[in-house]
Image 1 (tube, rainbow, N blue to C red):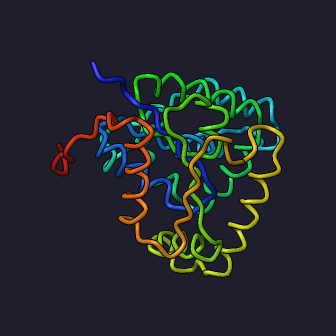
Image 2: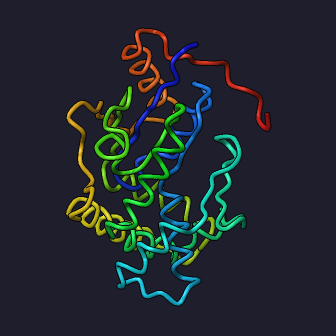
Length: 236
């Protein structure tokens, strides 16, 4: 049986991790795990509870017991919180802000890492900020995906503007710079480049161009045995 690969994709917000993670998972016939969505689901659970986000112990305890699942194929991934589909809810500006805060809590990160390891051990493409350094330090291939702040902010602004026309590019850029600062300076699992990661700068490149570079790197690292499969038709 062909060994199932574990592909780690780390990087700052807006670098294209989710889009490229889905594309790689489909091409390689692997499970896709968007770890950011898991933290967003915890954030929503905190917002819907009576727990204060500043109570690290209570938030960590909630994260360890709340039921979070990812369902569906890479192109139609649904995020389930206690059996409820919250895929759209967790993309709100309020949840985004809360997830940035609670994701720095050590107890939350420990709870999510444990779940991510269990979900990904059969082979998966995982994206996040500490996949190659903490969650799967022995991943078969590690990428650190980045881009210039303006490029990343423009991508995020385009996504969020569809949901909220009051969002400005300037506000999106400022929030992204602050998120980068928090992610890079937190004590628990800070955002950093793994020593053996392949750094891919997507500035000025199309998604397809970045995808081709990543697939070539996977093929080279796996000796041509990456197990790539023809993409299935949408909905299959």
